Image (cartoon, rainbow, N blue to C red; front, top):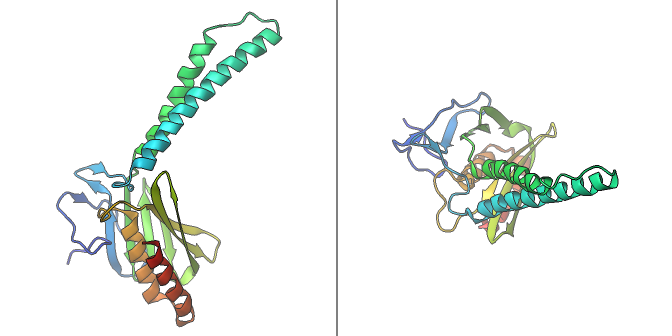
Length: 216
């Protein structure tokens, strides 16, 4: 029997599941990868405005920072009575722009990721790094959200007893979220946690469900 995606849909032939579920999360309920036809899809697909704005800011700040650095170097050379190098006014912005482009590429380029929801915990494999949290170790679940760059964001944070946090978050796309959206991972994780949590957390779980509905 094929394991469904977090939104309940079946795996499509073009979706690649490249990782095995880590130990400690119990029976696997759902899993989703963002790799389709060998290419990674961005988790903010459907709400990319803020991603492009952040990339543009990175390039702009790199240019400005490089220009200021070049100008500052010329002033310092004059103060030390050294012969100024006018080319610094051109070299600085170029280096700054290259740095900004490198940062922008990191913002735009999606990581290779597969997430898992089990009966006893959740896990994420991202660019070779594995994160796992077991529900029995979770002390509380925090819901966050807000609006920035004309984009609505959400966040679900599982706080562990050891102080570590497992964060699921991202942009809320217009219309239905694509299958690889972290929104589906967050919903599936909260549903599994709600079923696994001890009775003493029932009231807190009910409040979390109400807060989750309010964020939609």
